[in-house]
Length: 238
Image (tube, rainbow, N blue to C red; front, side, top):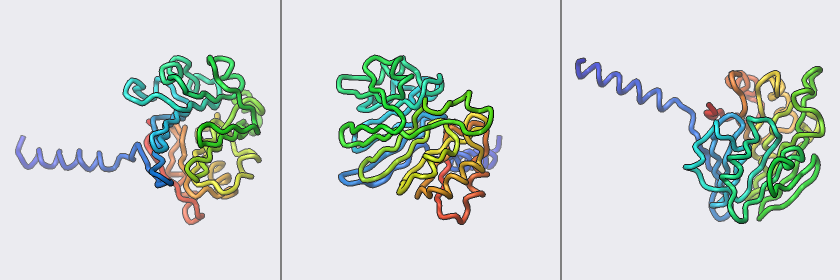
């Protein structure tokens, strides 16, 4: 192959790499930063000045041997793409706190059960359990009302809402002063882009990340919320 052709291939590869969404975002908070790692599907890792929070860790989404153990583990519900007891055990060390919905807590040694509407403070992080459930006819078999949690975290002065598997419930749309929101988008299990956009217009998070979006095109959500005062960031979760 000619040198010019090799150069073009290299430039094309560099361009494709540059187009990939980042896997980590960082936000300034008092004393340092809040870093969010987008591991895959509904799995996240938050690093608050070195204090590590794992959200719905499952082995299919990350190499946990290469990631730090947890100070706090949050489990939204007991489906296999959100609850992996072996990974939870691997991430647990002395002092780790596990917070889960009641059904998941029953499957994890030492986990704290948090019901819809309850709250708890772990370290300097306030955790509020927000109901997560399906509202469309026939979908409640996926996520029935009263069983699963989303979590509203107050961390470093920021309010971070991680919705779990849910549709646009009244409890979600009533939220106030949300800095960062993670909303799921994969019909029929969670929301359509139209439902996510409707919810975002109602409670107006400053920054919205679609997650758990599977084969749903997040560009549809970006278009729906253009000019609506909500910043949408799409990150790689594949």
